[in-house]
Amino acid sequence: MEIVMSRTTLDITLLSGHIGAEIHGLDLAALDDSSFALLKQAFLEHQVLILRDQQLTRDQHIALGRRFGDLHVHPMAKGPEGYPEIFPIEAGKNSSNDPKAIRGGKRAVNGGNWHSDVSCDEEPPLGSILYLRDVPPAGGDTLFASGYAAFEALSPALQSFLEGLTAVHSGEATYRLHYGNQAAQDRSRFGFRSDQPYPEAVHPVVRTHPETGRKSLFVNRGFTREIVELSHTESQALLEYLYRHQETPEFSVRLHWQPDSIALWDNRCTQHRAIFDYAGQVRRGERVTIKGDRPYLRRENDREPQWGLVG
Ligand SMILES: [Fe+2]
Image 1 (cartoon, helix red, strand yellow):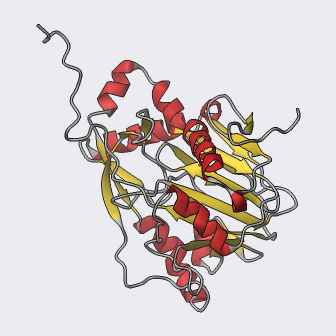
Image 2: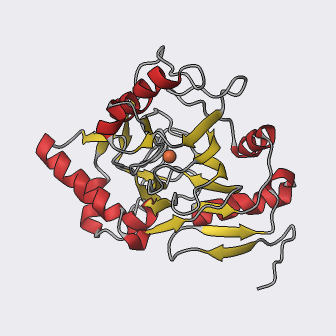
């Protein structure tokens, strides 16, 4: 298919039935306002986008993020000197995704379990822009799952039940393992913010996307600890069911990276997992993360439709 890109159209290839698109022929270092508007529209519709062969400086990467909104500074990990908004992603010969090996001194890979980025924040990020410069010769893909598709596939009875629930999201388990260990090994490069408590927040189990108005499941293995309104055993069983449901292949897409690929994902309606199948190889890049707002199912001033009260 011929690549066509103008200020009124984007050349888009859909990557699965519910989530993911590749955008062709767009230079993210040189976006005008109309091109950005189209990119944002595609971002909202397809939830995760990937673009190939991009050449951005660190400042251009940050500028791209700022087009979406103010930038998020990670609560636990410091960026490189002078760039607090940059979240470095780096796996090398000493990396592992096994907690026991990490406790024994291996370096934890980023995002090796299903999660929505920093969902333990009171205001979790709107989205992330990951720029990978070095990728392994094979492997290192990222899975993304659509919270919209997962929610919409549930029965109305379960949807309704879930809409009455909230869940605790905690950063402690993930961050103690990842950055507590990394601090000892790697303090000189990307230090551990030991001045910060582990973040924790309560969010609705079903959230309404503030821009699309669609409802999405919003629990994930990485950060969600328990459902507030249920007993411990009920909570564990329901969460495990919801995790497995969300991870159904039909609701997901698998992104394959090449050197200089950039992926942008909407963190409000997706979760993802970086596949660690490249032990001994290098996978390296940087992420810019955009600030989000507090998840809600219904806003205080929103009103349910008042059927039957007219006249
Ligand atoms: Fe992530």
